Length: 206
Image (cartoon, rainbow, N blue to C red; front, top):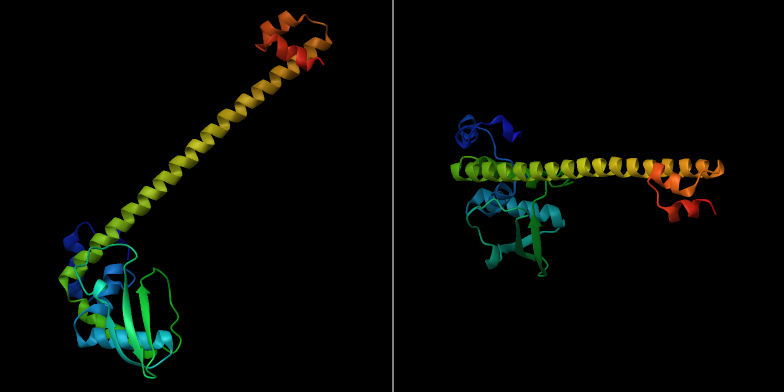
């Protein structure tokens, strides 16, 4: 979704009135998708975990340090889930959103449950606001990075041109001095005409 299409937060949030869905690639939305206190959210997380681990899960719970909370739009949001498999073994699984495509293989059921949860949370105005603000922050960060890269490239090119011109001028001076030495012109005169020092000219004549 191109955030620049929207002139204001209100215009962005108004999408929810048209039946639009939140973007699960945005961290705050990804977290809400699986951590809401609703049946859809728990079913989505359960199915998602079983698809990801390819094992049946008896019980699962979010750890206390990452319980559902306010959505600040932070990057790289993650949460830990303590799972107990049907064979009695347990595992602590970390889930984190990344902006890329995934292939869940046999996880068709998980995707269906996630779709139900996404439809449910997409009616939440606060989540639309959180998503808008995070997308704005992401856009501004990318713009700042691109500006810094472009500025660095421009400075590098400028410095490269200046250095190349300086080196070319020095080479021309040396070539002229060598030719003048071959014509037996006095070193003092060569120094005056080329700007090279006497020692530099004498070194060229060796």
